[in-house]
Image (cartoon, rainbow, N blue to C red; front, side, top):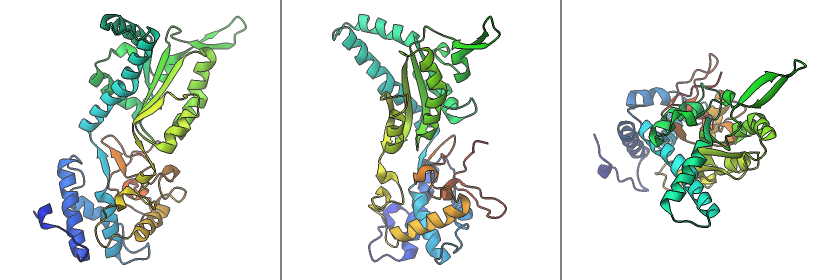
Length: 332
């Protein structure tokens, strides 16, 4: 196989040379990063979707599509586990230790601080964002394993409350665990922030109505800057964070997109946008740039978020068949 050293593409390179550079890059990514997903025959099947409907020669469309695929950020199972360690350690445990040390007058006595941290942890529960079949909840299994946490520290959202009948036969809602002081909601990616906002208006609002002094945290592996700012404006408040915050440069079709900073010859920003959006409209007319027009090129071992460009994950329908590169398992 041709190596990178053989593909020093200069400004005088031909489209064929740029194609070969991208082909080699994607082959390496598939073998070393993408867990052997999208080997070249699968990539060719995906490229066949681009057949000139965006108004360019198919070869031009496929070259630009190939460039977009070469910039796809795939978070595999090993990386997910490391990120979940960071969610716990960097976003929860270290701030908790600092909070406790401050409450103890800046104490550096390890035993005293450790005892107080364990007491706070015993009054903490971790939850996923969404119902038990969704990715936020799915990640809790790995989150517990990687951080060596007792399963008693985890709750399903339905188990936060309990219902009883009063003397008049009316249903009364109350907290199932009134002594719990902290509720930590774990998510994989915060794109637009809409899912967390809906949670804030639902379960979080009810929780705070029953326990106004409850401490709430929304913690994600990835978040767009706009998305996490939206979450911070909800009832989750300022204790909302992500291991990686993605600024506007991660919008792959924007003028300041980071993927264009070192783009090879024959990759044109305007063509790239037209190809992605033209086919995106065929696949998801309301959101051709992905949900919230996030324009991400991001996917996980367990799923691809709908904030990613639809041309990457969509399957189309009978009127517009489409072979995805990284399939998304949609919420039904």
